[in-house]
Length: 331
Image 1 (tube, helix red, strand yellow):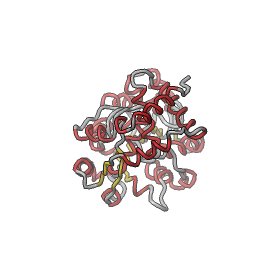
Image 2: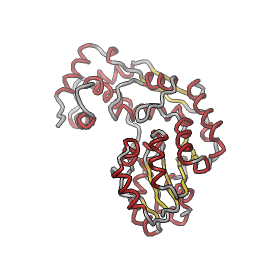
Image 3: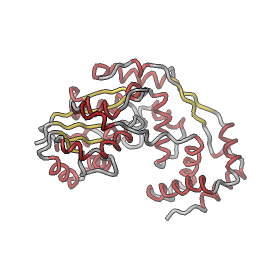
Image 4: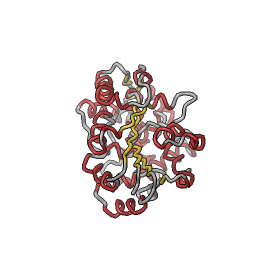
């Protein structure tokens, strides 16, 4: 029987990739301490495949996890996608660890900075909506798993419904990423009580938000191939696009940069009604679960996102971009 389940649920753009990398790199060290970072359901450094198995009810992966986890003092699972699962999917995971004490780690990040970064992440993974479309989904409280904006209070509602309120350990991203602080060692100490091992879990920055040019071009690519490519092919095309921009920058790139610079901007600040609404809901609902001071989360923040649409590009530039995309390898 596993005594403790540590579920690191993200969400996206809160330093999760950096933490996953250091956990995976130190899986052997953790094992010697009686802590398992399972291979079952892992995809690279994260347990994204396990989250997908929970979503679809893939019993084989869940059985593999149960067999691998048997007898360990603690098991650590980490994927941003756990925060996006509905209660039924989370209950499938809870059943595997029915006798374990759950500890659910979730990071709050100021939404004026998280939402633009998360929108860029969704674009990277093939979504076509612009940033205003993202905010429209926030306004509608659209919490569709794996496609919707990060709405912390709703995600926390589902996690606590499955694992109990006492399981929640609510962290503040800005506190743990400030100079002199590090998410990895703090996580190891807070969640596993292994402060003496903390120095081995120092993180390095990973998966930074791409620059505005890259996000804008990838979104144009997504729109151009909409309905014609599946997810793997679209990711291959994205990587081919980024490689081509590095090795053979096209003649039209300067014109595109000028169009991006001239595009209207959406400024998102802590005073925005949607930001204020969602941050208040998170603190009102779960402020008592914080293990970090709330002040860094309350500090005002602002971001500016260019709103470039295909119609805002001159026809010759748009045609040149499409021709360039059509010439990239997909295989």
